[in-house]
Amino acid sequence: MSAHQQQILLGQPIHYTLPADLRFHSLGLAQGAEIVRLRFCRGDATIMDIPLSEETLVALTDALTALAGTHAKDVKRKLDGLEL
Image (cartoon, rainbow, N blue to C red):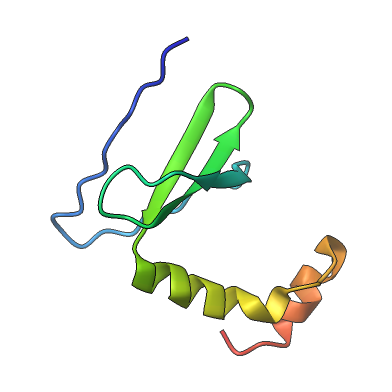
């Protein structure tokens, strides 16, 4: 099965929400100006990469640092205690 790559053009203000059943898979190799890609999947058929710049990767890391070491069942409670 060959991969189909689709680009999302952000020429106008719009808000995208990813499907809730996508699961984080891995960090993907950079393929352009980005430093790394976050790879999500839904089964074997759907893979979605989100390319991140250095600045975006640092901002995401800062935002997620508060969750480091948190067990999955405790994430909701921990997020409720944070100022988002």
